[in-house]
Length: 329
Image 1: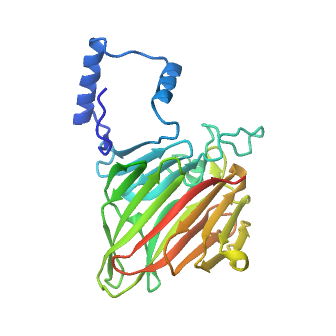
Image 2 (image 1 turned 120 degrees about the horizontal axis):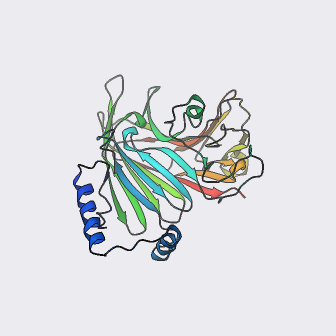
Image 3 (image 1 turned 90 degrees about the horizontal axis):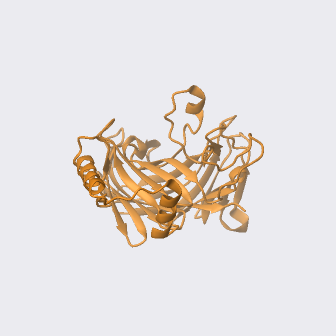
């Protein structure tokens, strides 16, 4: 089967040119004995010999069947599985850490990394039943623009993206989006998302292309709102530790207990959350000066917690953050 260019979207209708061309190619080869059928095990072995074991599988999908204007980018490697939704401004709507490997627990109530019960930090909610809809609700990796006490989230903006490969990096370049505050102030932001092969790292570059007042400043708040859950159990934040590293005196550590605590440290080194049940640590780093790290736990029985960075930017400034996944042990 002939493969399309890597930056072409995957279209899901029989009427699309890609479907017809690939079906014709496959049929021609099949009738001419140009295809060899392989059992599943042999096909998997052949595929493993042809590629680097850390090489990711990724594609930019355009769903012409349900929503022709929606694009999703899927990325999977041995360390994580990620879905980025352009209908939500390039936010991560699904994040499954695999950095700690697959470990099966004997107790059905414990966390484990099987295919049936894969752990997640972020999960897009699309299930019909009420219990499943609660799992992962409110989790997201996005950014907010803040000015005069008003906050606008990029996840409420639709955009499109182009995908290309630069050496060992997979780069997703989003079209600029413009956000307007209640007082008429407008800001145009462009996002570039980079995946470095074999690093378990996601880099976000947010550039302020223009402001309606070039002399003004806006605050960009990059955040990860996550939970510690699996497909078969309710998320539980009781085994999560939120930390800010900023030297011996200014470092902060919060064991999530549903008390609604939060902490902020200026010019810190990193903000992180350690998820002991799945032996995974998520770390957020940021560049530049005058930046502030923050962590926050939910109040009551809420299972969602947040870590992130904020920084004031002027026109043409760029704020770069990294989300790294590490083993907790």
